[in-house]
Image (tube, rainbow, N blue to C red; front, side, top):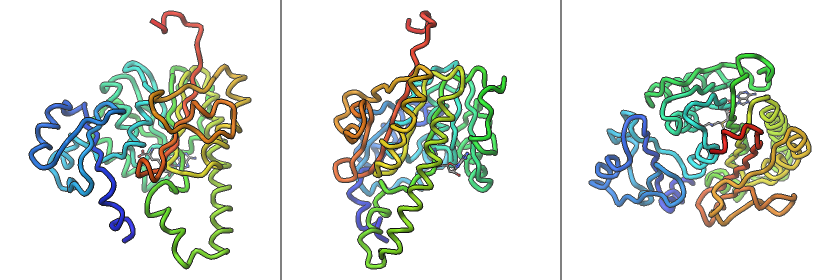
Length: 296
Ligand code: SAM
């Protein structure tokens, strides 16, 4: 398929599951097969040559490493949850970012992994099992249906929101647009689909910001479209600031930031399909609490 034509250009990223194995041991094992480097941006992430064949590798099969793109691995890292925290992963299946959170939290604290789709809940549970994480509670249901005032969420300090998106940042999806079958009808369909996705994304982000004890919210998509990215952030800014949130800068050393269509776009993070071999978007909201002891 189209992805095979372009696939070889894309480096292979591997996240070491530090719940099961340390990074240096993983490097020692993988370097027997391929060149391995530590990623310069994301801790616990390894970069290997394009085309590295790892799907059947024993470290993958036993959950010591996970094949996870760089953009994906930046999301949980941007959220920076403390090990003792309670965290919600709002749209969690198949669970790559959920188990990434679990590793960053050293298997401590609690993660509530919410997923609407029943089939995908099964995949989420398989991923969690493979990771060895024991601090994840799966909730099968609608994130929008969770009541922020419910006492069971009173200790939630951070939310990761990676909602359904167009996937336009992935290679196969982008090449679809070059196919002759991409007619005016398809374009109409695409813009309606994008609009529907954006409506949900805005609702879900506003909902995430409304949990009373939450002080960090990360929003991500694998889309290149402004309507799913900067526009979603723009739409919640008044609410966010009324609740005491501001935009923070995930990975400040990263060059590519948001499209300059809103005040604060320099805080947003973009990955570029050409430069970075994938399209990705991350926004981070933080609330400065009055709890001074937290800043130590
Ligand atoms: N974060 C996941 C990962 O890294 O493995 C990928 C998440 S995927 C982009 C979005 C997920 O959100 C899908 O599994 C979809 O079924 C789920 N979803 C969509 N609407 C939802 C809702 N209202 N509540 C909870 N989950 C929802």
